[in-house]
Length: 277
Image (cartoon, rainbow, N blue to C red):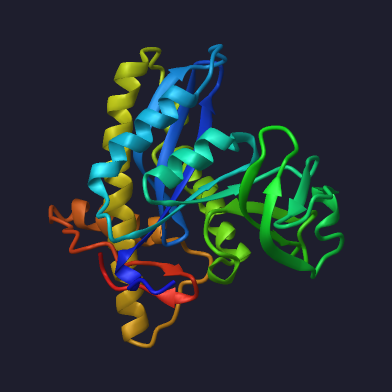
């Protein structure tokens, strides 16, 4: 994309619930196959009304923290797609990378005939990209990326403002890291799901501690992985950076030592290794 690796940032928008108590709307940085929360809003579960004001406030809160010369990819799954979200991300100078449902219609740029989105790719191994107008109602001029990888049950349909020649559907695979991030916060990590809190404001402060802890652990884990690679030891197959960082930190704590974080080593994005950021 013409941008140095250390000036690239992938974000993911998603929502997670805690039983029937809370819904957490979060924006996370995607790195090292994990998701590190950087902005969130906790609301009562099943609260009626639109989430739009919350997402807009979270995006705006992040805007001053990201340098203007960085390339920022913002991923979200089908349940969060909305035209206003696409346009809001673009207005920030970032690039939406939003998955959409296949039930709608599209037409290629310069044409008048609409076709079903489900017909863009119809079998595994197929892919397509081009400039289109998606949807008959509330139309969106965008780049459409369609990819059906082997082993997937259906195709990915992704809309972005990037030109077709600069975008790759496979980048959307990073959005799956948000699920690993939620697992780190819950059962595989900080046990957030066991909280008895009922006050959303208090819970939001707990999330601040969890976010800092996640950054610390993943950062230490990425350093461990980098040292292993430098020594020719290879990857710890099946062991995440979260676990790689947590184990030496627990050991250091048992010894009464401080486990410092020197920097977060950038992960594999766009097929490249990024330097520390």
